[in-house]
Structures are given as C-alpha cells and as structure tokens.
Amino acid sequence: MCNRARMSGEPETLWGSAAKLFGERPRDNRFNPRELRPKSRNYIVREQDGERAWDVMTWDVTGGKAPWPMTNVRNLGLAQWRKLAEKPENRCIVPLTEFCEFTPEKHDLDDGKPPLKGEMWFAVPSQPVFAVAGFWQHTAEGDGFTMVTCDPNSLVSPIHPKAMITILDPGDVDTWLRGSYDDVVRLQKPFDPDKMTVRGPVFPTRRKER
Image (cartoon, rainbow, N blue to C red; front, side):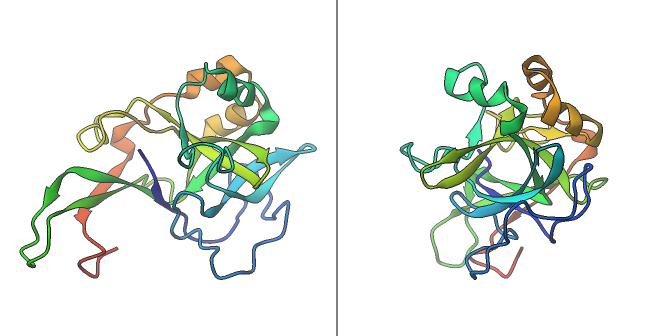
C-alpha cells in the first residue's frame, strides 16, 4: 500500500487553512516532504482551538509500537482506530502532490542487473495538491499520523488491487475534519478515476527518472 508519496511546496491557504504551522518547521536536513516515506516527517493539516493550520508529524501513527510503521489504516471499526475516527480533534488532512504504487511484476531493463518493480505515480490534475483523509495522535516518540485507505478505483486496482488512499474532494474536507463518525465512514470511498492520471513505470534507482 502507499508508502511513497510527494508533497511539493510549502504550507499555503488550502482547504480553509491558514498558511502557518502550529509548531516550528524542522530545521534539519532530514526533513524533506518532497519525498514522503515511512517514519519521515511530513506536513499535515488539522484543527486546534477552532483554527485550521498546518503541522509537522511523523508518518507512523503508533510511534514505533507496531512491528512496522503504521502508515495506512483501513478498518475504522477496530477499537484502536475508531477512537481516532470518532474524534474530530484526531483527524487530519495529508496534502499530497502525487503518490506511488509499485508494479505487480518486475521489469528486465536489459542493463545486466536483476529485474525490479517499477514505480507508478498517481496525481489529480485539477488539484495540484490534493487532500488525503488521515488521523493523528500523540505518541511517546512524538505526534504521528496515518493515511486512511479504501477500495481501489479502476485506475489504481490494476497496480494495487487491495486498496488505495482515500482522496477527498475539496468540498468534503470540512466534513472529514468536523463531521460525525458516520460522516467519516461515508467518505471512505474510492476517488473518481476520471479525475486522476497515472505515469510510469519509472525506475529512478536505475535511470535518471522522477
């Protein structure tokens, strides 16, 4: 499932948010939202004391307590996830420019090296930065977030038949951040494939492709 994604640019006034951070922007060179990976620190949008703004959190909602980084969550009925889904203060928006899924099959690039899977990058042309449904919580290792997944649409399913991230229409962002638990569950659905594009496969570790 989605463990590679990108977010180009810095905080803006998107989805009713202020172009500010609740905390300070990390100053070290390891903070790079341009390339999102498990356990990396990335931008999210959330609400606090009636204000909607940006924050920086680690892409692992359990803070390292699970056997692997918990970057994606699907079953909102499970007690540990329902407690987050029920509380608007624990919901967030993950801003992305594009996200990646790897091809099911490996490709021989005729370069004398072993075949490898290619990267397929999905985007939403009408939304240069699109909103992904997410949750966050405090952990012993700091604040962590996860993306919410759903059934794949017809564009994603040939590459990843099990799930895709839950992309929200701009008009549904308020509902995700402020609505009821039932509202949240209703928004957990595949995004319209006609509004999306895909490019690839690309092989950035073998060729100068991004």
